[in-house]
Length: 237
Image 1 (cartoon, rainbow, N blue to C red):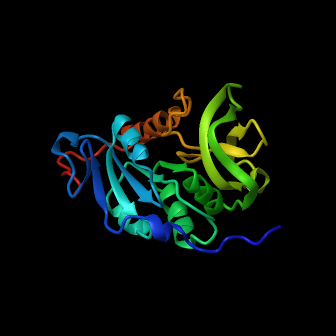
Image 2: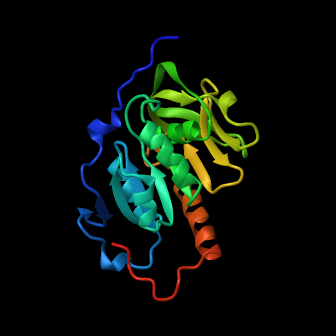
């Protein structure tokens, strides 16, 4: 097997300061009109703005955190959910992110996208590998194993989570590549944690992959219903 790339490339592309994502784009404070929306904290490992737009479209207030923000700092914001974003390169050198992914996933609903998906796989004891050529393009078929539906997806990754390395019985493998059967989506069986290897924020013609945001929002709503916000709780800034 060829040697793995060893640099933490997320450090080169992440934001340097935290920010809110509003209807007008990045901002220093949240939009008062968003009060009452559930809060999604997004780890920026190279996040695409369209992920942030889709989260707002799904009904969230969105706060973006630099890659090396500790899980303790993120959880101190009392998020209703956490998103681990896409980003470049090998996930294995991102030990800080792997540790944070496990901590937040055990605390709040968590969605991993692309690199974030790989970080969750590593955080729960799986292994990652490098694809020979990578999956690149806007027309990759992905099979939803629950329904048999084939999604047309946008993909841009060189690494993957090894299905056979996942802890037995802990995750349901929900999506696989129609081309090479590699893992494309998974859902934790005991925690409100889900992740996809491709880009649900992209629109390669149809919007086949957008249900990932709805599924995340549903898990957040279920948790909020089970643990109501205390009366008189203020806005989190």
